[in-house]
Length: 147
Image (cartoon, rainbow, N blue to C red):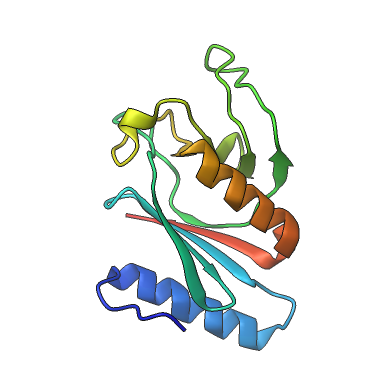
C-alpha cells in the first residue's frame, strides 16, 4: 500500500472505511473516490492503494456540492446539462439526483470552487475515472465527499 504520509486526515478515514467495508463484504467497494472540498482534490483508491490524486472544482458559493457517501447511479460518456445552457459534461458519473463527477473545458478554474454543484475534473482524468468505474463496476465503487 502506498504511503499516506501527508494525506488529509479525512482521506485516511476513507481508506480505513474502505478496508472495513471490503473485509465485511467481499463484493463491496473495490474503489473509493474521495473528494475533499476544502482542498479541491480527488483521491482515487483501488483495492486499498491510492492510484490517483487530481485537482477538482466543486460547487461555488450558493451552489454547494452535497457531502456524504454515494455510489455511482448512472454513467454517460457524453452528456449535456439540460439545466445549465446545454454545457458539455463528458464522462459523467451521476451519484446523487442531478449531481455528477464529469470532465470540464474550464481548466483554469480546477483547484477552486467553480461549479453549480457537480465535481469537475480535467477531461483526461474524467475519462480515466469513468473507465475505472466501468471496469470495477458501479456496485463496487463508493464516492465520499467531505469538507
